[in-house]
Image 1 (cartoon, one colour):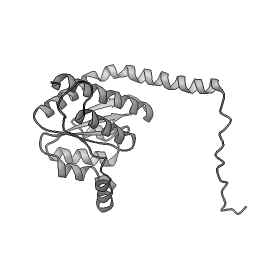
Image 2 (cartoon, helix red, strand yellow):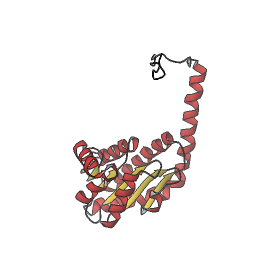
Image 3 (tube, helix red, strand yellow):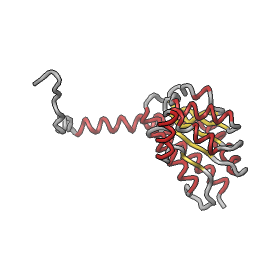
Image 4 (cartoon, helix red, strand yellow):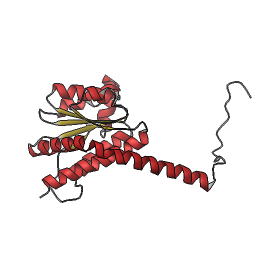
Amino acid sequence: MSKHSRKEPTGEMSNFSDLNDIHDILQKTVDEHILIASSIVDLLPDIGKVASILIDTFSRGNKLLICGNGGSASDAQHIAAELVGRFVKERAGLPAIALNTDTSILTSVGNDYGYESIFSRQIQALSKPGDVVMGISTSGNSQNVVKALKIASTLDCQTIGLLGKDGGEIKEIADINIIVPSNSTARIQEMHILIGHMLCETVDCSIAT
């Protein structure tokens, strides 16, 4: 075999099949989830502030723009879908847009201006004063989200960070932050969608007709 050759993966599972080992991993995941979820109680004041901002924003006829990468992009779409459609109660659709859904915009802006501009360019095009821009980032350091929130601030939009770990760079940029106290990306993402649902439920209860 030449020095440049690499062994092809066989696709075979490792010897990791003991049910006790699998149960331990699952139990550890559940325990971590419960521990982090219990800490959300401490975030209720910040979550309540964000909910109030969203209710006021929608009541004025303004909109919510949301952005994030990877799993956070999925959360952005999920939250927007709950608001445009409905969460639980019947009500009029609410103006919420996830900025990571249009592949033509994302690829053209990314190609012409760079990946860091894929959200900020849309905010320049779509936002108006009084809108809210929410940036979701488990690290708080996603540079395209950082740039989006900076641009939003210059356009008289209110900015919200839905973050994890220590809040990163976004903590110093956003007007208000909700920071999940964990260093685990998976657990942070689980709490982000819980918080997203809490926000949607509060909006539902306030705006439902």
